[in-house]
Length: 238
Image 1 (cartoon, rainbow, N blue to C red):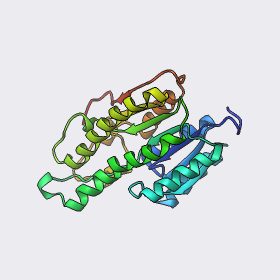
Image 2: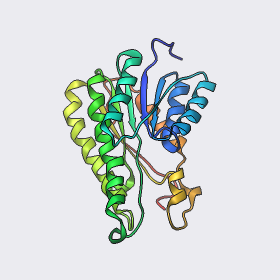
Image 3: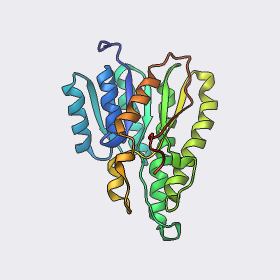
Image 4: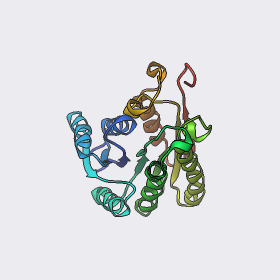
């Protein structure tokens, strides 16, 4: 395990639960200093406690990724730990599931702002604090490749994340900063608690499955660029 000086600084948004929490714990177990961000500080405290109990290091920053001043403060806090940010996981997002004609404008805009605009803001303010070899993970979805009935807002946001990822990957390649889009199938997270309908959650991926894939990719040598990570359950799509 790296010593305190050699620890990477890993920033994760949406780190209070689900994929974000599992990924934070995985990086913490690897010996990295994890900066935890989400709107709910109490959830972050739970994640931080888990990391600390395993001997890892964590810093909590309450942050709304749709608010640029919040994002700037988050990035400044992360960069101040060791002078740079090594890995970023843009995991914050949300979903509204309903026939598109029934989606309120406010719900549509909130979905796009959290998932897509939040990713843009975090990436925008992070890159000046990253060195060659740094890596940004954007959280997409199979819904960013295929549209599903009643998931139009979520799908639009995730399609946007993939397009944004491709564009900034081309921009940042000369600087040696890598962009990896994570494209999982359905993952059993608290998001499903509020989704109408019946879903076989036993046939979903676990958050830890996605976390392991992210950490493995982050541990590749700096010259290795993994552009996309596509994960699915052996049982197939729901």
